[in-house]
Amino acid sequence: MANNDYSHITADGLWHNNIILKQSLALCPLLAVTGSATNGLGLGLATTVVMVASNMLTSMAKGIISKAVRIPANIIIIASLVTLIDVMLNAWLHPLHKVLGLFIPLIVTNCAILGRVESFASKASVLPAMVDGLAMGLGFTWVLTVLGGIREIIGSGTLFANASLLLGQHFAFLETTVIHDYRGLLLVILPPGGFLVLGAVLALKQKTSLWLQQRKAVAAAVSGGAS
Image (cartoon, rainbow, N blue to C red; front, side):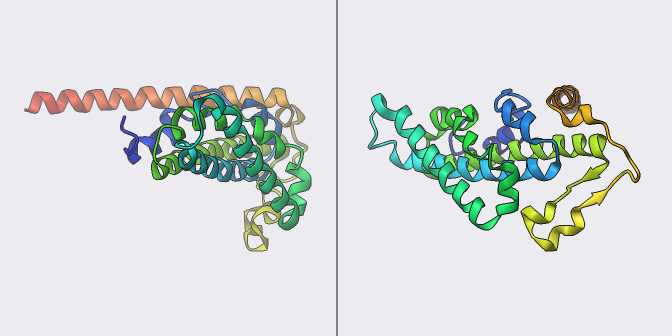
């Protein structure tokens, strides 16, 4: 795949080479914060910003940083960006920072970010590197949000609780009570429940990929027979 093949870069990030569903990376923050859809969305968006910016800066600096110090230099870039995001969240979204604050610094140790910086951004030009960071970040975000939503509904009967803390009062309508008078299922909110829901989502993803491959093969066979 060429580095400027944006459709493939986007498809890889969102589905085919998804950080969680394909690469099985960043599982610690996944299990830690997806007790609700809002927490998953918040950490996913913060991680996406770091991935886009770190890919951009790494691509811009690849010509002036030698291979001997490239990894330490990339870690410094990522750590600086995470610190900036942490401070900004604390200043402008303090209630959400109180929930996610423990996990924001851990974005530095997210091996998915360093992996994309090393495997893609350090070899690509600036625009493809930024597109890759955006696609991988959004792929990470939608999985966190979906898992958070499933765990939140089964675990507490709500969806997007406290969304207004993340997105503002205009998005308070997202805060929904899906199951009224529901006592909740604590296991799903705890990390073991995260493993169970993640396993179900992985199985569904694999099933969907096989179905899409079969449809593509049938379409190719029909097309070949017609010609």
